[in-house]
Length: 306
Image (cartoon, helix red, strand yellow):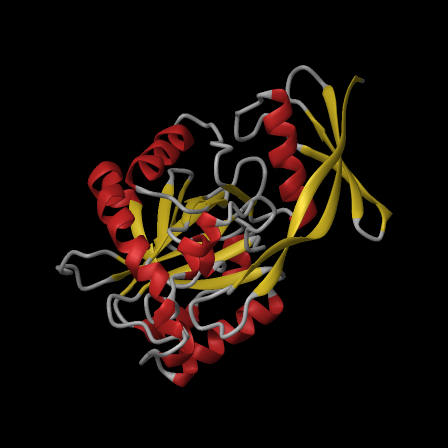
């Protein structure tokens, strides 16, 4: 029996009660390309897209800071000749997605992705702030994404309809099933059918579910963890009700992070320490050795009025 077949990394993570906050993949701009074919272990690299298209995305992600490419698809047979392509701008307030479509993947190379991501020229696309829900089902990347992700996607598709998509690797195999809420870029870990539906419902109401919250993509990991702690301490749930104010390093492992509560102008301040926990698990199903994982601890929390 191979090492890989002996365990599911997501099950080990859940059993060890690994905390998930502060682990969301960082990305300010996300390119979501509908590719309803088989995904190799490295979706873009292993795809049948032309070298021209692959270079186009490589150049775009090199030029546009914190940008990422994901493949998406549904489980329904396609009837349309055109493929969907979303450019998503993740940010605290007024994030957006621009929905475009192409007949040929080579047509993608005509787009100025930086201009679209800045909302300057939509180039025939439709700007929307409606939710998109992604579930990682990338089984060739990690078997946990197929084992846990596919069932959650099927449930969420039945609940959220066309807003739900399967996606390629989003980072954090051991957190499968991973659910993402765009355009804000909220990441959730270890979702099941019921929690995924709740996450979708609350996001549509403009609220963050703090349980199994990994963080939001537009923040650094320290700020992601701080947001989790502040929401837990304060009970503030509105997705745009706790804008980031500032952060500063206290020492090598501790950050002071400040948020300003919307409308009240109340200042929330969290001192967050990063440490290596006693938890030692394989980070993916392909890992041959267990690895200790970084975690975050709330050292102090303060509220003040401006």
